[in-house]
Image 1 (cartoon, rainbow, N blue to C red):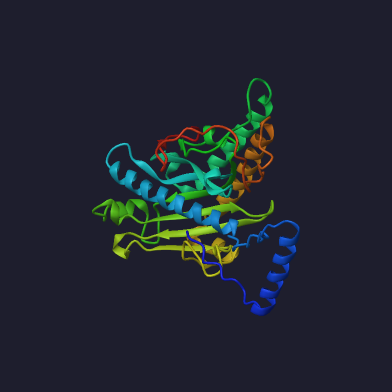
Image 2: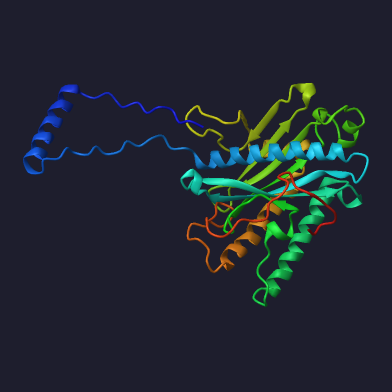
Length: 318
């Protein structure tokens, strides 16, 4: 994204010339050097909006790949229409230290435990709490803390070791058009499969969170992509990377199609706590690491990488 050109404010030309002449004379008399102009500050990008935009693009990619893989395996080794992404943020040296987003992802195989999304997320949350308790009891006994990217995901993007958890998202193939199984009987190709994304991301404080709901429509609706968010999506004044509509948290929570948010929000809180323990345990954590899912340091080696859309797995463990 290119920043808008900087326009210098209007100045009094005569006064500016006079000041420059006096400074030049003074500098020439004592040092013989030209004065150095102070650098001009450019516009500041809203970092929170930038991270939310990056997370949305990452989840749109996952949802597309989720639909593609589910379509390819519709007759054998079927996938569940639900998947999770754990979002991590870290200072990116290639972007001048500005934070980037990476994801660890998980898909499920179709089966009784993944048939209903509310029961799936409730049982999965219980599973995470159990793993957290076990890891806490074994901490220091030749075993490190629970790492979401290893214990709860099938695949993960490449990211620094000290990247910090910042949000969770559900990729689903159940939409306003119909359930995944209904669409499956009418679609002629993967291009006709729509999807939805429901996301919870940490804000600037421990208690603040952003709720995001995205609708990815199919080819029948010209691949439209609609975003509703409780927080600002404006990177710079009048500059957006994703068109979006603002909504209050209650408006999103009270929509019957978004009922699953009531399971994602407490799961997000648990994952924040789990990853804060991991970050605090690291003896070489970067001072820039920020807990509660608000950021991450830049030290450490990359994580394992693979299919960016996740890889299918069964049960609730890895």
